[in-house]
Structures are given as structure tokens and as C-alpha cells.
Image (cartoon, rainbow, N blue to C red; front, side, top):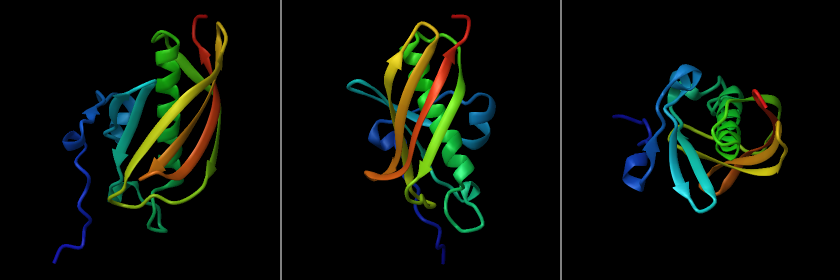
Length: 140
């Protein structure tokens, strides 16, 4: 008998895969969906994402949050290269194998060279992580 959870199929709900490159290719795939006011990002939690406690590893969730906030800044900065200066995360609840983990972010303030952003990582409307950070627009 197979006790593995059935993973959510993002394509069936209109999600599109992000082109896997670099580090995200190792921990993804990540998915995106355009919505009013921006994008949603997501990934299906797999056994390889778990820590020894049986929930999605905090480092995985922080990496995902960094990508979600960073992609939001990248879009807001006209797709100019940018880098994380500071990322603060608060862990609220766990994510488990089989969960489709989603992330959304919003720009709080943008200057010519620095962007302040915050976001949520959720599972089914339940907050997993709250994150906020500062990004530098490179070359600005």
C-alpha cells in the first residue's frame, strides 16, 4: 500500500512553471500564476523538502520566500537585476508533504536604488511564513 500523499498538479489549476535556473532549479520547480496586481508563486512540498521533524525545512521556506519577494522586486524594478540586502522571516505554522505552498508579495516603498517589500507564504489560506525585506537594484 502506498501512503505517499497525492501531490497537487499545478497545471490543472492554471499555474505555469518558472524556467528552472541556478539554485531554484535545485529546490524547485517553482510555479507562477498571474493575478490582478501581480503574481502568485508556488511549489508542491515533496519528501525531499522535509526536515528531520517531518515538516518542510525552514531553509526551504526561506529560500522560497527570498525568491517570491525577489521576483516581485524584479518586476517592480522593470526587470533590472537586484539582490537581497535584508530578509526577515517569521515562522507561523508548518507546511507538510503534499501541501501546495504559495507565496505573494507587495512593494511597500521603492526608491531609485532600494525596494522595501513584504510577503506571505501560505498553504490553503493558512499563513506559514511572514517575510519582509530590502532589495538593492543593481546598477542604480
